[in-house]
Length: 192
Image (tube, rainbow, N blue to C red; front, top):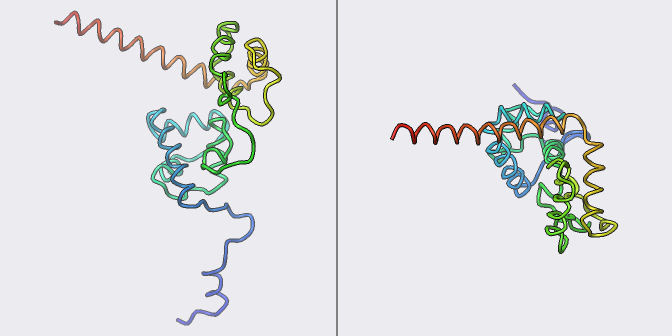
């Protein structure tokens, strides 16, 4: 069978506009590191798929597994969903240098100020502290515990129910794992 010239052109044609932008080898490697870490944190690609879906970032388990292997599983749009899920910019996830300033958590003195702010505002969720630390660009109005605490409190008040539900579920899982470990130690101690 003889291929027509037109069909031959289609085989080698560049990607059409609107198709996902492919990632470079280096970008796929960075994304693979992030996805592999997330899979490890959640126990499996299937569990990560469910957590991401609950947070409004639908990604199929096979796509997550491909990305963890370093395959181009969905290009830039997939990388954006992963970045959004973990609260980072896609450029940060892919290791692309940006011209914007550092994240607030990288500012000199941030760790001490955040520690004091956490003491002053104990009911603010972990997610809100993470989100405020992820901010970048303009510096905070002032680098003092009260200002940072008010920003985190505001973020906490405005956080989506999905974010809160995810954090509550993760906290419950951590607490249950700690209780299970304590109970197991007690049982083992009783059998000695």
